[in-house]
Image (cartoon, rainbow, N blue to C red):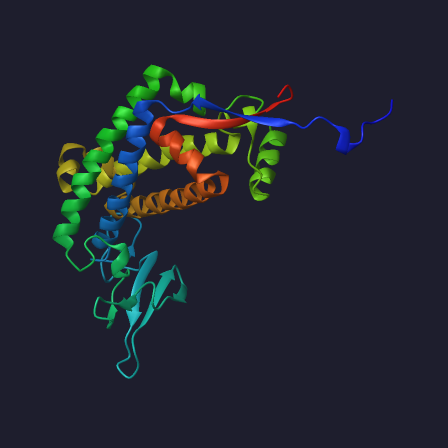
Length: 287
């Protein structure tokens, strides 16, 4: 059979079609989560600056050896140098951690730069107020999301991977597509790919609850009501360390999530999360 030359073939037209992708409750809770996470992360760094070190176990103080520490070396003869220490490994972090510039441009010893903390100046009391208010709002918003997800079937319909998607070959193929920045098109873009589903499930059912529970374990008031919560995490200092790790992983997820949105098409992705409508492009050979 003779092949038709490329210049004589009928052109393939792509038809744009809007589909309903996100329910109203998913969109509203998504944006509330974004606001809460931003405030919680920035106010949390303000709180962490009061004692920028992490320990494991029941106790943690200046005399104890931290598992992680941010500080500054000030010899007096030279400008202070910021550092971060993980175990026995020490890294210079001047300008980012330990030492940075204040609003006047002066070099100051400060665990985090002023532009990543809330408030930007040192104020532990105000940082705690911001943190606690938005922590409760965040928890309430998640309860609404969980309840809606159970009622409308969002979790098992949209986020639960199929057996075929969990096969090693399918997962490796999806990882390779992500590394090549190859995103699904047409009908394949209707739902989430395996990596998205697994990541969302991990964040929603592991990291977020873990961050909330460890936050409660650090509260003296909650310790009096639920004393077993402290023992569950091996002590308040262990809970604080796990809280910091979970928050860092959530921040990493947010960065990757935003990067994927920008690479996949920000206008289409933002429209889907604002209006619920997502555009897919399907081939139409009859145009």
